[in-house]
Length: 330
Ligand code: DGJ
Image (tube, rainbow, N blue to C red; front, top):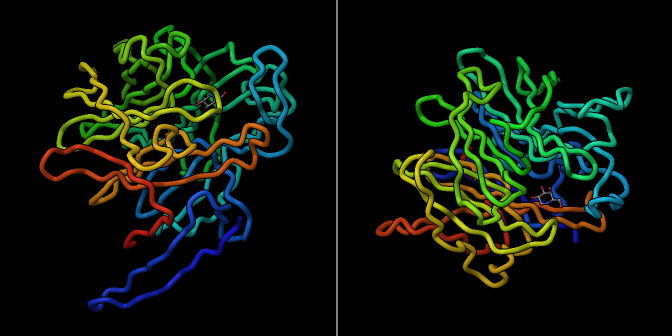
């Protein structure tokens, strides 16, 4: 059921802040009143503005005859901007489909998933990596696009298999020293690959690490806390929900250890019926972003965001269910 975004402007201690509540899995609307259409999202902060990039999923869902995977006509990548993480302005289809070129990865008959954008301070370019797929999911490539502005349009540079390996679900992570990594489900989704990128973030530099070998993890989201690296991921069961896990490592290219399922509330063994996509680092906390996929009608898929709770003594991370999403101080 669609619920209403309640927005209360409060004065506290002389500081204006916005307190808002957004019901989880409701149909979140943008500032034009349209439903936010940006699935398998990634968020990038640039100059006090958050940019939410996600898959444009519209129209009817059909099943690919070869892979039997449900899909919609590929609609490119949408972008929304916000200063408070609650009110989102539609910025357009920033990586649009190319309907006139059947061979393009961006032809509507193809699949583009899990867009993630990072900013390269040296080249002053916004760099987007996506999972570039064929309709039957046999291509398993990463695609790269660039833009001079966060709201595009992004110019598509092409796709490849990072370090020669398959690349399906994927994310990007920029370390404190500016080095970026693409983390992807590889080897038929059996093993994650952590691919170090060239300084311009457009290619792989040849150094990579096989991680969580044979553990069949996808939907990776990487973040850093107190010098350690954390990786939230799902199992591999198509659009169906399964158990999440958080892994930890001392170095991003180091040995990763699975810590177990952080979703500790009811239905946590199915990630509250969702799948991870991104972890957003804020000043004092981390927000985990999830998709709830509706494979019979993919364009009706929903979002829910949950804060990661960190035990102050042990650093153990849990993600309890919360019915409403509360905004942050802008
Ligand atoms: C699970 C992945 O996480 C999604 O991004 C998508 O590729 C589906 N599989 C397709 O079944």
